[in-house]
Image (cartoon, rainbow, N blue to C red):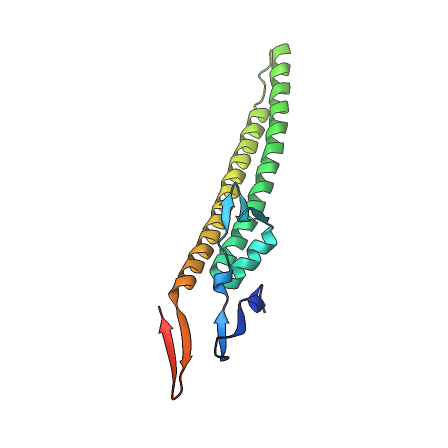
Length: 171
């Protein structure tokens, strides 16, 4: 059983005591995204709970969110490494600049090369990070749309009378 499936379906009794199996999609609420954090009302949701809720309604949204989460982690690591290399490049370039001021020899551009490499990694990491965040937001929006469709898509009822039982389906 995947995340949350046990809370999705339960048995209930209607007014006449007939056992009806119903879906509790109406009890699920939509998730709001603010500044990369996810909320239901004013309560902040941990990532585990967001994944749990997504898995309850739509495996596609769950997979998109998980991929976005992984991209965010990878992008953050790449940007962090790039920032470190950029810092090293700044110090090497400053050292080369100072050394070239005291000698007549032509200095190498190793510092500038390292600086450019680090800057490129940092920018690439930030792009991957933002792409991952957008995927997570897309997954949450898909989840919310799925909830809206399921909430209004159908309902059914049973009406027993003295000589018959009527079963109805409302869209």
